[in-house]
Length: 189
Image 1 (tube, one colour):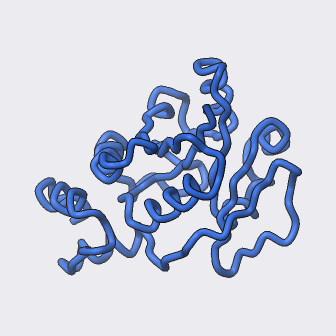
Image 2 (cartoon, one colour):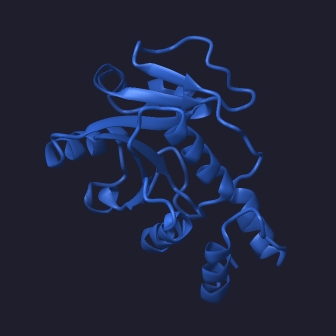
């Protein structure tokens, strides 16, 4: 089975994430996409993150109606901070029959040389890159890089958290089930 790994903080997950994932599953040979909730991205500050189990639950709520999507907590029990190459090595050992690809935005793709063992990542795994505005992919770092033109919305989790703090609506930015849970749990206030 071809599985795309969509890594992220998902703090919180929003419709932009879902649109990208849906576009990629429909325009690639992937059978499933796993939303890999990262407990801590080594390139981002941890202080603004909601607890990883709460973020995982929000992802589960957001994708529950799509059988091609799965929420993954695989990095929760791995050493922190999480490095993509270590997660992939672990997944290959645990699921030797699966073929894994990494899904990322072109902004992250341009930062790839800063990642741990990025040469190994490029050599062993296919990278599915969705282009973001202001981050064109002018040169591919490997032959296994596939560039996709996914629809882009100028939405960020940072903006959504700010809206919540200011007691403003996040309707249409995140799924209704996620809004209800965030509101009931008083997240991001």
